[in-house]
Length: 209
Image (tube, rainbow, N blue to C red; front, side, top):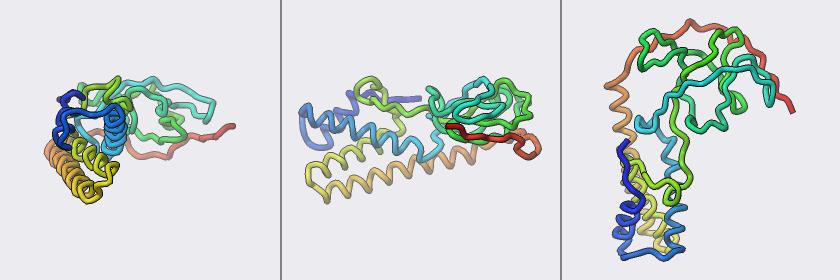
């Protein structure tokens, strides 16, 4: 994935608001705004640049739910939202099948009679929350949206509401253009995935306290 450095992003931000440098409090506000805006944009579309395919081990769990075939997702370090689950790596094995699953209480649950001991989970990466400090590489495809959105936040905090509204509209337009790009790419690159016949989900989920 192509990225832009935080230092370059900050330089473009200061240029956009017409200053040479930021006060400490202003840069703190920029970092907070940047991280907040990234979180909002991260799940607006299934961004190809943020896709991740990871192999996960399937195991029985008893708390906080009881299930025979499960994978914990809510504390995962490399998958945030689950888009699809496969029995094999669909990128390298043409015999891979898409599996049925449910997401319950932070766990990905397979049917109780599933024979799989590992699965491949397709989803998006976990959103960083430390842009400008720990994480310094910003996704380039989101750069224009983030720049306009952060400028809008700056103007709002500065009491320049008219300018803030204008920048907010431009930011949303930039994000919608990127979302349109994703939809066109998905239509062009759509592939056929094998799926197992539908069957009842034979697993009892018990919530425990």
